[in-house]
Amino acid sequence: MDEEHARLRRQVEQLRSLLEVSSSVAAQLELEPLLQSVVDTATRLAEAEMGGLLVLGTEPLYEYFKVSGWPHEPRGFPAGRGLFRLPYETGRPLRLDDVTRDPRAAGVPAGHPPVRAFLGVPLRIKDRILGTLFVSHSAPGMAFSAEQEELLAAFSVQAAIAIENARLYAQAEELAVLRERHRLARELHDQIAQTLYSLGLEVAGCLEGPQPRCPRTDRIRVLAARASGELRDAIFALSWGMEEGDDLQANLRRMLRRFEETSGIAASAVLPRDSMAELPAPVRQAVLRIVSEALSNVRKHARAHRAVVTVDLASDRLLLSVLDDGVGLVGETAEGGSHFGLRSMRETAEELGGRMQLVNQEDGGLAVKVELPWPR
Image (cartoon, rainbow, N blue to C red):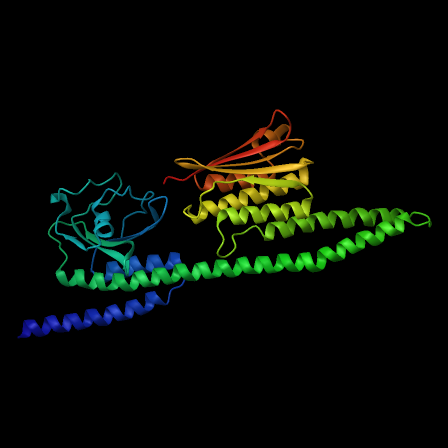
């Protein structure tokens, strides 16, 4: 009787602890701190020595990897061949007293802390699995109980909901920023751009009149023209982002129309017939950033009459090019892209594991060529 009473009391304490930590985790809205809090809490709840959390991505395989209790930070993401993958692949918990005796174990990679007892559960929302949450012991003879498995599985449900909420919160914030950018772009165009245009007309009228020319009037005309150009660049930069409910093709065509309106340079696109909605969001955003910056450089420096944007989806990468019929690049800029805008495009591509080339075309003009990896 005393043993049964102790067991019930222990379960009540575990449930109270679960409610407390679930409430604390659910209050987190910033994703990175939330993920670390989840794995720290899971390790503590299961009375484990170490813990880990993997959130699935599109490409690469994992989007986030957090650990708790490890002697050092992990070196990159796991390769996806260990036992930790089984909970998210099968959708079921996995509890082992000694992983070294399990034939499914793929071995411990170099630098990985030793593991004996293992307990992993999937992070699930309805029919969708976000990743896996696991804990472990390194000392022989330690093991996880069925109660600890139930406790971790219950906590993983709350953790998955909190992770999804944090993701939705981040998306809502990004959408709010995007809408504000479009609002600012419209106001700049409707108010300040029109004022500068009117100022330019007034100055031009003064210069064409019969009265003597004033050197300051010429200077005002130059300044007004320069301010108009810089304002057009600012409006274009503010309005490059993805708009709600649109795919990449629609956004690129919209960007080219705005480019034609603000620059007077003819622009066209050669795009895949199929929708590019399956591309990961970072790749779509990178395409828009690079095209926006490339077109801005065409307007500022190329002295071109035409620009062409081409997107091609190969088997394992996205190929992007922005061509113009202008003067091309010379010297240091042509070799390494030392200009700030060119450097920004190069860094955007390299952040995703891609690369960018600048090529002066034989018949004149510049070709900006970008490769972005996209394993299907």
